[in-house]
Length: 174
Image 1: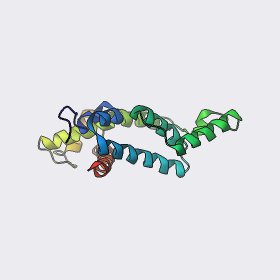
Image 2 (image 1 turned 30 degrees about the vertical axis):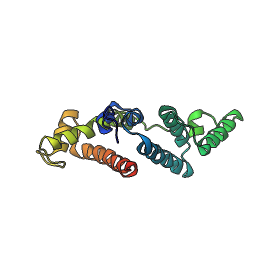
Image 3 (image 1 turned 180 degrees about the vertical axis):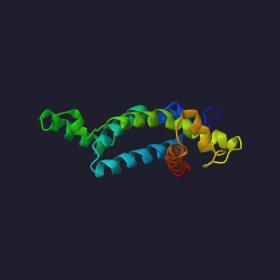
Image 4 (image 1 turned 90 degrees about the vertical axis):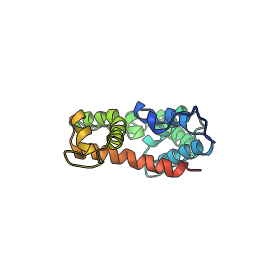
């Protein structure tokens, strides 16, 4: 049975730290499944050639206070060796980190900063009677007006988070 003092998982999502929220909200098998979902996602990204997934894995494990998986430790060690042997011109090159140029950087920053709270505001607007959808009376327009963003941007942000939340829910059911 869940601890009554545990905070609801979704309530804290807007704070920007999904791992901290999950640690406070999930327990036992749900917490284990939450970690597994994220680590498998990072491992798949790494297998596809995304070395940045190594840094994401290490950061996730540090926040979750869990052991770094062997595949990530081995991958990081290999990249570190290559850095030490001067096989890369920069750490960005070593880990495949690239940043969008110009306006895209601002858009990426805006998305990272506002996406979780916009997701929650769409849910709240729905609870308050607005349909989740397009149109002047829809939740996307309502939230978009607040952030000075189009309905389609709000919809994309909402759908991305909603997909993640559904995956987490699916994988954290006992």
